[in-house]
Image (cartoon, rainbow, N blue to C red):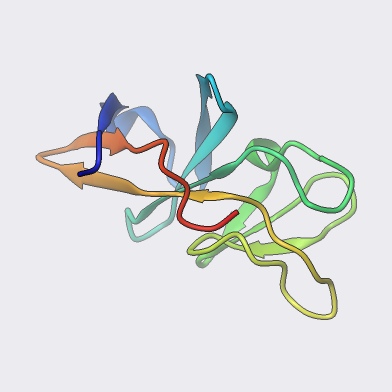
Length: 107
């Protein structure tokens, strides 16, 4: 069974932006796309640990602000030619409320 934590409303996250949720597992960046889809990744690029929450969201990807690595928001995987991934967390929106699970989908 998944435990969900209410972290705010969809409107609390800017389109093509993110918010950081501080947890016992570290900072988690919660992203919102232009189509109001929401994704949650560990707020650390697998390359040099750049803060993904400060990156640029485009489509269903985010570009790290430090060295321009691009990661898929759906699973935290780096886009080729780069390799690696960051942890991904389940997130859902119900009635405009965003809920996060700390159970990692991908490590």
